[in-house]
Length: 238
Image (cartoon, rainbow, N blue to C red; front, side, top):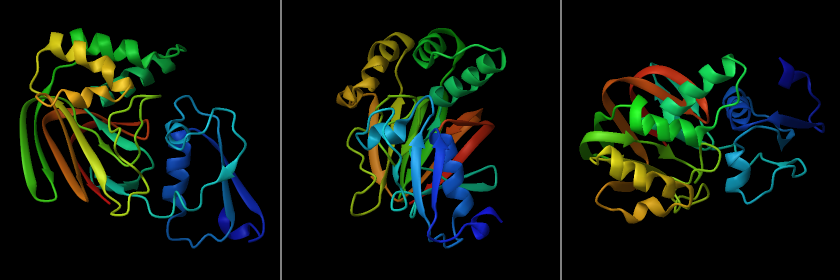
C-alpha cells in the first residue's frame, strides 16, 4: 500500500542496518518498484556498507541494482531474500546471545560472545552439507555460513573471495570444522581479516548456486543479523 502511494519520481530512502535493508528488499520483491531507492546506513554492523567499500556516515546512495536479484534462503518453511549472508553455528549463537543482552539493556560485544561460546557456551554439531549436488559431512561443525557478500557480524570476513557482483551469481559456503576448542579459538580471530581460509585442514570454502545445510540438533541461525531460533536445516538458492 505504501509503495503504491508513492509517485514514481519520488525517491525512497531506507534508513537502518543490514536487517532493515534485507527486510525491505524482501518485502518489495515482485512489486515492480520504479522509484529510485537510496540507502542510509544507521545500523550497528553495517556489513553491506563495508562490503561496498563505503564508510559509516556515507551519504545515502542508490541500491536498486544491489537488491534487485538477491539469493534466497528457506528456513522452517519460509523463504527470505538476503543481502549479506546466513550464519549457522556459533555465528547464529552469537546473535541469539546478543539479542538476550539487548533485552537486558546491554550492548553486545560479538567478539567476546564468540570467544566465550567457543570455550564454554557452544557445542559444535554434526553437519551434512550439499553444494550443487556435492556432499560434505562434518563431525564437528563450528560455523556453516553461506555468503552473498564478504562480511557479516560487524566486520567478520568469512568469505574474502566472494563477490556479490560475480558473473555466475554464485554464493560461497564456508565451514570451520573438525577441530578442538583450543585450535578453533586460535584460528577464529583470523576470520576478521579473512586469513582463516589458509587453514585448509579445518576450513572449507565452496562456491555454488544451491546450498543445503543440515545439523543434527536445533541451533540458532541468523539472516543478515536477524535471529531465527530452533533451526536444523536451511537451503540457499542463488
